[in-house]
Length: 353
Image (tube, rainbow, N blue to C red):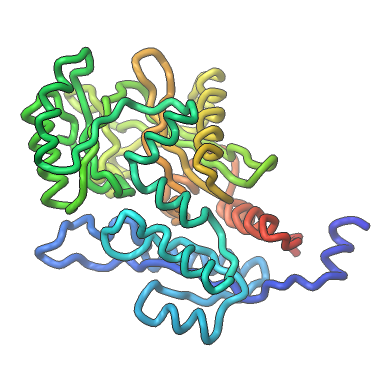
């Protein structure tokens, strides 16, 4: 019996798919202006809902608010497409919704709470990937002001440039044009800014001067594959010649950023990017979909600088849909692939009809 016959004889157990999300909102005057940078716009949520409905499902929009638990318990969807980043500034916030869904027995797309919590934490991600043999930048960790004594030690070695970032943020939050530190004084200033602005520890990574490449990974187990990649650079190179993909770049990407598909990359670089992305995805035991950000060091080795197991899915400006498009795909197929991977993981047979 072929797949088509099987799907006709066994009714699909999924009719209603809930989309759980955090809606982007204005910040208050005493809050960092990037506080809700990871949250989604209404246009992204609506586009995702339209795409899911095009497959024949009903959708229900479920914002992560004080009523979410009641909605999930009184009238639960059959399945959840999870794009929620979690509430507040906790390092485990991306695990909040998957933990809730698992406690209620509701299947969902994407990685589990453990993988999400580790992947958001840049320090733990670096430790795990390094242990698993995935290339990463050298990193120093600053938990408190007492650790600032380490700043001078970093500039004694041959590495003279570092990038300072918040320990558990995404969407380039806390990454500015002056986050690059070339002295102990600059590094201390940037670490203190993280402490004060984001109320969390800071990390300092050795700056990698080569190309920045991001790759999309889709699937599970033996079907896990790289679905595309792109090189990210400035349309107009800065006078310093140092490119850092900052928060401001992402906000003004149409004017300032050049996204180029895999055809601009050497075959060996493409192979290295795909291999490194897959190794990182598997090392962190991610599921269904992720975007892996890498940067090249002086020797030509691509090193993982960030993991995005909840990649942005706006068809208008998010990196994953853009790189997939530049690699020959389209938004319809991307959302279908994510759903299909999650369904298969739960043993749900689905042929788009």
